[in-house]
Length: 374
Image (cartoon, rainbow, N blue to C red; front, side):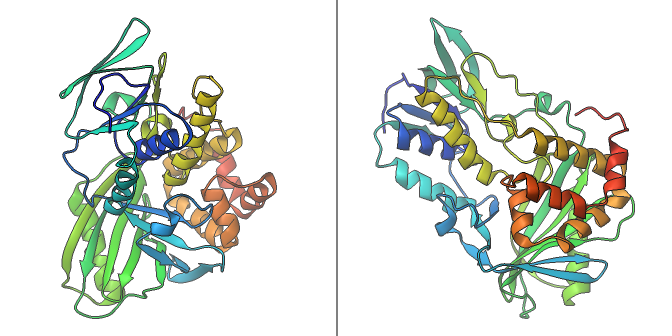
């Protein structure tokens, strides 16, 4: 890895988007790349879940794969499955190890750990990035950092707490993910998400869509109650915890000359779902395509899907008591391939129309007449 202080491109943040973008740049250009990361080391601190279609660079290294996807609504169960589609889980430590090993063989990249951003400024047509480990210069900066000011227009969040548990009895169906077990709460949308790693080990999460973020004890009560009622388990060993907040609204990007936001800060996550891993591969390719053509990096907007996402988010805010029925219609009335294409933003127009027809259209149309700016 290079030790120079001059780079063609600097990436702020060695998260999912930063690592995937860096790999795309190294694979297709001769650019010298610096990644700065404030963490001291990479660890298992999150789970990356995605569908096996479209295939990407990390599909084959997933830690777990499931064939059956279960959705529950008021005790009613729908199993979604297809010979061509699996649900995958990749823990963050495996993800980072994969990319670090690739980067070690490339002299065009430098990774600075335990390195925090202090300031970005312009000087003589260069971008100057001041950090706690030195001052670096580049032509382009991709910035994944996010602060409270960036979220000032966001009114809705997907927020969750999950724990990995080990039970004394074999109670989980090893090949069946519970993607959503929708809970019966009138004025708030909440569901339980369960990934079984074995018959007695699973990740269990309580997820909410709301404008308010809750005390972490609320999610824990949800999980304990669920485990007790569904599996008759009162005691278990907790092996790992995670907590996440995903904005369900457009981030104020604040791009400036040759400084571009990426990841969640660049609106790379799908507003209605929070999915971002597949987008990171797609958008990184688009960015490098632009760089190779000597154009400013930009992402192709999907205006119809963005419009539908805005309607959905407004629907969650204004009619939370009807969101349960929305998801029942979405999962119970559609084929898995159509569901996955829609969630991955790879649907064609026919598929999108088919999905819309299956949904509670009158309730969704009502939200168009409610003034909510996103």
